[in-house]
Length: 275
Image (tube, rainbow, N blue to C red; front, side, top):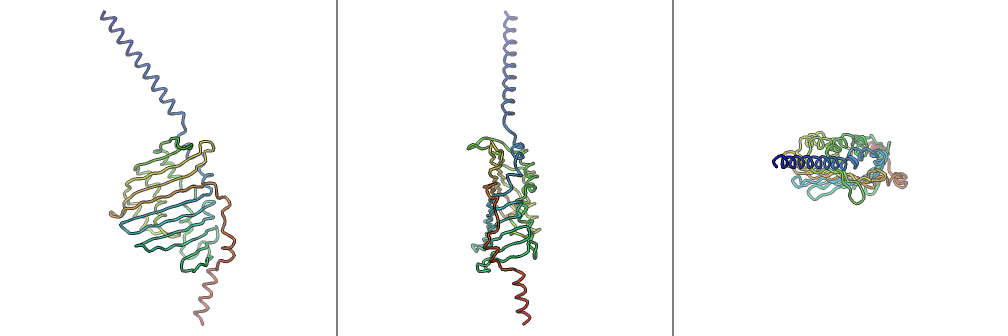
């Protein structure tokens, strides 16, 4: 009787082990059927990011300052339309610009409705500071770190690749985007760079929506809360959407035609000073 009872226990253990093994195998197979974060991100990223629309905001209540950028881009920023507003202590200042490979068209509030045309590399304006956020190469490090931490799920017909939390490597990878956001367009302030690099991230959330059929990236969203300088809390939001919908983006013909040359303004001022 004892032998029969022992045999039944042993048989039960074997059956449980086999069932568990089969269950684990099925579970592993089920997990492997879906695409990985890396494969989805990298499938069509460069071509998806050829053109689109973007919106970016930064805000710090402690500094009583916020900024907003919005516009369109094409060809790694070689054609860019940007509206930038900086608000400090309830006073706002807005500038609009168009960038091409060679020229910059600028509309400031003091220009009284007149667009000013200047060379893209005139004065201290750094066009790369604006354009790099529209270059797929800028996201190479970000996407590599993102893919390692992201989860994938189906949502509203798309693949949602996302991360929500804190990760040092991913935070360091997105630092250049945040540094550009905290600088005014076309400027590079090393103090801002140091401030961001030493900041403490409270939370970072990144979401890519990817079409399951075409594998095109439909939108990209970045959100972060961080503390800089030990006492200044910031929120940062950046969204790229309408990707692939602005292939015909160009500086409007009326702006090109009616813009006043900065060189002509400079010559007129010099002539006036010499009188």
